[in-house]
Structures are given as structure tokens and as C-alpha cells.
Image 1 (cartoon, one colour):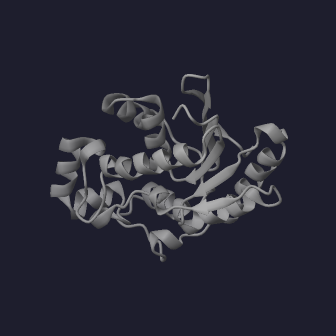
Image 2 (cartoon, rainbow, N blue to C red; image 1 turned 120 degrees about the horizontal axis):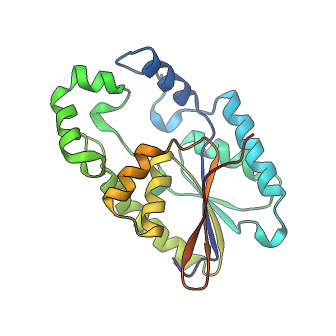
Length: 224
């Protein structure tokens, strides 16, 4: 990634799905009652406020520090976040399905309790393999997501040499971009994921020091 001047990743604002998932876990439910398919889950009212705050941060950057281009997951919550955050900035946005959230297959819409109760063999297999290599039937492992992110970052590097690029993505995507850019190993990534709750509309970024991209921020809130 040495060809980029700066790379940032902004997580989407709070979605209605985030709200329902948190409530289901707190209530000890087995299933999350999200009516839309994952790609169509919108921002909550708070999420829209968070995205607007991210926009104020971007607008407040000096001209030479602003991103040259935004690459956005096509999922509705990320598209809405980017639209609000980039409004009036003149920063062009392109959509790329390689930034989509991790696909969960048969465990989609199930809480931790729900997987244990309804799919005990899958719960046991997930514990045995760990989250890096566990692939739920019909879904993706973290290793699977890494394959598409390697491809995406390779294209970003070659298409925007010396550029400043911001990605709008999802929680797993941000963790895995950090894995790729910083050359982490499985153990380090797993420890980081256990210790970190990525905030909605948080920013993680890396800046070139001439030899490569070096960490600048991680999980920095753009919303008060």
C-alpha cells in the first residue's frame, strides 16, 4: 500500500439493524427481528446524525488533506452514510461490492444464544475453528472476506497512486483492512476483535511515511 498517501475507513452510522440486534442480545432472544435483507437495512435517526457529523469533519479538513475519492459498500446503510458525509464536498464516490459486510449464511439473524440453541453443531464448530476460519454454511469466514479485500486494495493502490482514499464499510471489513495494511497475524487480529467495539461512524486511518502506510487513528469517533 506504499503508493497511497493516506487511507481511511469509516464505519457506517448506526443502522436500524444495529438497534434491533443489540436489543435482542440484551433481552436474551434467539432471533433478531430485522425485516429487511442485510443489503437493505437503513440508517436509524441517530445514524443519520452520526453521518452528518462525519460530513462536518470531512468538510473541516484543509483542502490538501481531504480524500480524493470515496469507495463505498453498496449496502444501503453505507450508501446513506457516504451520501450524508460527502454532501457538498465534491468528493466523488464509487460503489464496490467487495466492501460489503461479511455474509453469515445460516446463522444470519440469530443471536449468540440462538446459534447455541438452534444450531449447536455450528456453535461447536465455530468455537473449534475460531472466527478467522469458521465459515457458516452459505456464508463467509474472515479469510473469505480477506480475499475480496486484497483484490479491492490492490485496485485502489494501482488506480490512485499517491492518492488519499476513504472507504465506507462495515465492522468486519475495518478489522480486516487493518489486518492487511499492518500485516497482523490471526492471533493479533482475534485479540484486537475481542478487545474492541468499533463505533458507528468511527474512523480508522493510515498515512504514508514514504516506505508504507503507518497507523494514524483507530476507531476514532467522528460523532460526539
